[in-house]
Length: 471
Image (cartoon, rainbow, N blue to C red; front, side, top):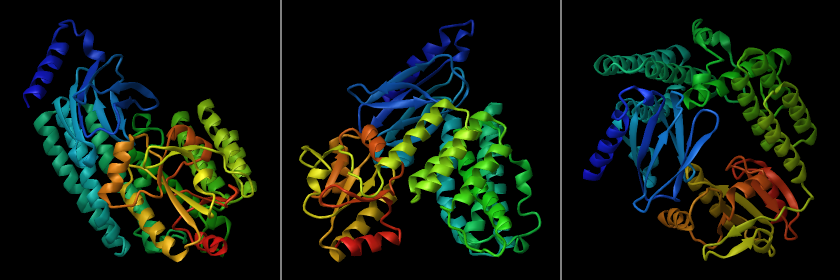
């Protein structure tokens, strides 16, 4: 506590030393990470990394943000990340424990109240999401009433905070967007939850004002481009718009395959036509195209999606990323050899995937530190499959940029055996070579390192057919 107060005192001196206000475009960020996964964190603004901040021997860091652009930033450490709102002359201290990254996060110093409020709002919405999912079983009118009540309570609390602390207009804009776009997202998701993810939306059963909020949607809000409540709304929103257009074009159909190429091309076309902001449009189209290519079974469909993106995108960096993914996916087709990547076992020995997959056909699944549910679910599923298919080898690879100690600590916390556990030696390079853009991805190879499939999941129906065939 005394050290924290000392840091705050130093930071306050830093900002009071210039009486001419020359520090108005600067901010200071520092703090402490308990149980760090590595010796650094990365600070980002909306579009790019600002800098790498290294921890000292006490796991503390400090950094002066010069030429600050007021707005949302985020910091990433060990595969997890969280946002921070930085404005001129803020001096924000962060303290978190990686064992409970979001839950333990606390801000102090100048600018802390607004950031603690934002984190509290996010944490409330995460727990609220489970309740909203249960509400989706209710009829549309009752569901809408429940959501209206939740939003009203949030605004009552926010208005009290604003009246007490008189925060900046930027804070008010962001918190309002947080509340509103979370409300909008839940309405869009209701259509999938209530009617079925792949089924037609029966608009006749919805209240006439159910989608009135769509008139208030700003597709071009670049201040919120990296703000996940905003982005988390846009994806189900465009999914529903594309689904409605698809069923309109294909009268008589009532079931949609989400990997259908027509549906996904419609989604790109809608984004291209509705979003005027080049930055927003390119980013969303990049994300949708990347998701499609990562999950496509068809070379022809992948080519059509790739060509549509290339024709619409104006961002060279995104073009390079999608081009690279497209070509990588072509190299990972069934019948080809799996490219060699280096992995590390629990004894800290360096191996290759082919060297641990010689005796049996092998299922390779992935996990990361930041996704606890997927980590547990995939391991439980693989353990069950091991018993059912004894002639198949199952290996798990951690894809996070984390230390060997942290990787093994997580496994030990869940009592998982280390025999079939590995981590990438160089996660960024390996993920790129194997096109691991999602931890749900599963690769299956034969004993001679031939690819059987490079694009399935432990939770898809097709994995059962593959396992029966190779067992």
